[in-house]
Image (cartoon, rainbow, N blue to C red):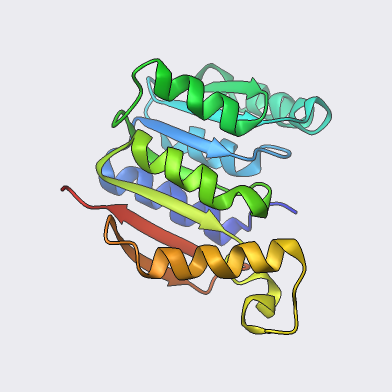
Length: 181
């Protein structure tokens, strides 16, 4: 249930490549990917980290503190849609450089729409678990997560607002770059 090391390395590389300073993470769990992100960001960089679990994020906070990066992480314990909507209402549109989505699959489309608005032009969005152990191509798999991911993948493939690539690392990561106009 945690992001794979090679995915975290990719996120860190992308942060450096685009000079990211402000990032969003939807779904924190034990904070492994947020830790990699925080380590890759400049000292004045920041992560808006969205999660609902005090229990799991308490593990994350311990490691962030030990690594000396907790000052970069703004953990918001609330449903991510509420957090993202609040940031949008506060004028956050176009102010983030990179976003990573790895939370409840049925809300991926909702997270994506908000994150895309929050990203600057040429900002990056990474979405985890898009292959869902191969279930997305198995039409007999009809559980709610698989159906939602299948529909979401189709949407991304045809979304003219981003340039997109699906990378077969981990359980599949979609990388999208927001187009300028």
